[in-house]
Length: 315
Length: 315
Image (cartoon, rainbow over all chains, first blue to last red; front, side):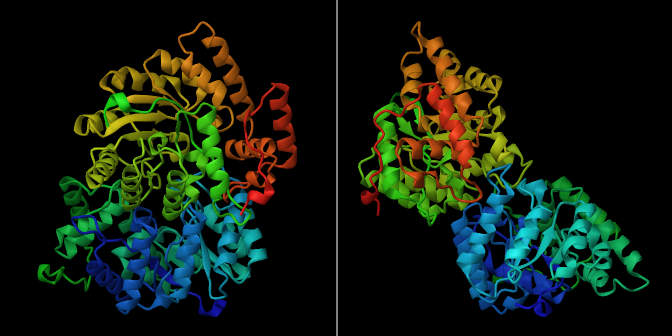
């Protein structure tokens, strides 16, 4: 994969719908993915943190990914999460994604053990790259210390880039710390290392400093407005547009994010079952949902083009 | 499973040997498990933190467990770890362990998401118990906040015990905080809830307060001396023996634990390959190994009866 072909823009870590029995709902999933691509997302970072990916088995992820491709979602728009605690799982998921023709993979470090060394993390990523052994692999490192508790340091990136310049394609920085994103941009953006902000709050800053877009939870519900900042970051209106999407983000951030995203989709799709989450996550309370929707509607928020779920169409 | 039949004593979270290619080594594994049971362990908490269990796929764990039973390790001595991030994986591993006749399962909470609610954790454990749906299930909760970052609170235990008195059998407390272990003992030990200390440092205190033993990393190398405290906790010599095993533990704790345990086994089995770990963990340096072995030998430490690996016997 050459740098010229690489994915850029707004990617959503697609929320994974579950049926009442907590099994993944393929029907709603395909529909939501197609709506996202039609509404501003250039790519889909399926199986991210906000996808409850780590609440899915390896087989459940593989089946969902195959379903998307079979149902006509272009593989070159997909950047599935494939980083697991077990090296063997990471290798299996990554090889599967590459074989399906995915644009890239977004890889968590192994996150069970805390305080591990950069040497150990280097060995983990190196083993995955070598075992997958496919020149099509574009690996994006996933830095999300507030959740994984295992950081991807600049030193580690430098070593991986030096050893695997073809495979190591970029990073998603979900540290929430702009100084860290800026340091990644300053150190590596000119080497063809693509930096994605982990929230649209930093999208304009990221673009102005050589970044390639953002991979953001709220891409699930607000892809059009966020994409407008990506498309128009050089425009005079960029700061105003950024302020608007940040304000919407700030509403969502008052609530548990994954439950909030699903509640919003359930509301606009008129489909209460969309709000289902797998344990250990729980849905919003009725009062939280009411408050969230009230705040969003006060902002004139919409999800244009979302297809209302027809109960008869659901298996 | 009635309380009378429940496992007690010293359990080792058995370290998992890997070949140079990082695949699990069934030969060394069976040999080590049998040595542990012959040397003082009453049970084997396979697939614990110190087993690098979360560095193994679900299939690798299932195959290893089946191998142990096939090779004659009694299933009623086994308490495999079966708690994963994904509910479906936890259900699969737990049902598999129960079907094999294991004494119990030691279950981590789902550990990817941080700051989750007791309600969400309750739903996770309740779903596992209900989906496994087998009266033979004895579930031990695994409290290890320094690693999992997701605690098992007293409130959660109380709710699970009330709802599932037959299935919820006890806890391993690896908080490292005796006050927490004591609080668990005071609240639940009289209800037939079996508290295991997560380190032999607390073994004597645990026994004196109604606990049932310990599940401890150093059980992998020092099972005889630790078992002597368990067997003799009412004896006049108990405090002296406790002091001795604590001193040995304190030597090990100066080093990364899993690497240190494997280095010690490699030394006494004259089998350097035993020291192999899966990323993200790394083996001790030569200097660390030399220092560790020097300290242990100065204490007169031995692993009596350990079988030296014969290179010709290794596949």
